[in-house]
Length: 230
Image 1 (cartoon, rainbow, N blue to C red):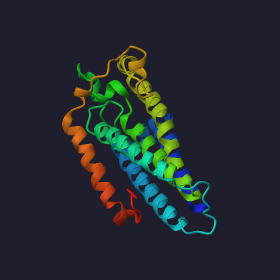
Image 2: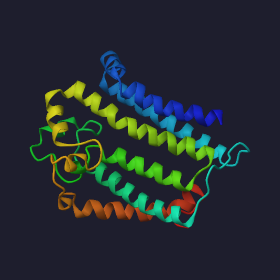
Image 3: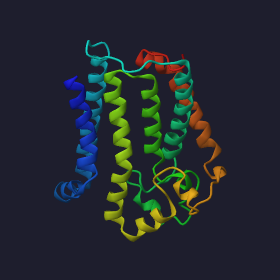
């Protein structure tokens, strides 16, 4: 279990304590933005691989006890949660957004805040929260809690970390964008700062999310050795 916890801690802290703090500015100031991004990407890939292998090695370990069991109800719930998660992830990745890597220039677009950004300025990370939470519903063993719980924590804290980083870097431009949007999904809509306009999301993005969801559900047994639908 030590190896899995170490891998999870490395991956989480790499993003929250390096990418999400003033340390990033110090590093880019010393070695440059390009080299920093290259090294950070390599470290992230290595950390993710370490986490994946450590999780695979832990699944059948004697210490990997389960704290809760899957029920027909929780299985059905998680299928719906995963569908929503993929909607947030795919739409988030295909929508111009200044919270995304190297998309700060999107703030110059006068029509930026529309579609999914009316719901949340962090659609990808909230999709990751839903994805991890859905997996926890049907995976109550210690290894799964370390993996999915760790990624859930990273995504939740990552939204606040990115907000702080963008505020430091972009100042008033960021403040104007943040005033029109919300971190928490539907927060800006519920407080009257936005209106829900689902038509702006784009039908092609929704269809793409459905295709990715179905494709990964069908491929799940081959990729991970476990059925995603039964």
